[in-house]
Length: 141
Image (tube, rainbow, N blue to C red; front, side):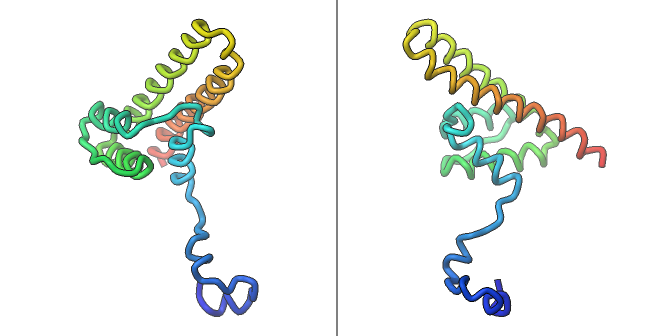
């Protein structure tokens, strides 16, 4: 933000604050959903992300999970395999949901807790399937 905009709003005088406040893109929100277990219902580790990369033929270096996922999305788009990459994530989520259901059966007292995680993971799976459908829509535009 330039000085003119700061003068128009005297309460926004801290430049460090302004640098930290950035508009999130839709892509950043998707990465945030995928990397925050309380939103997604699953924890995706760095190792899991590296395995995602191997499944689409990309070796990704280990660092922050969000950055690793961002790179894989970019690589998948460049290789015109975004739908395949999303399918890999969806199959991972399905395996986690299966694990949660097995835990529910094995430990019935945790069924209520697991149901919340299953619900969130199911919503993420639906979201990613919708995203996969949108890839086709935007490809034709």
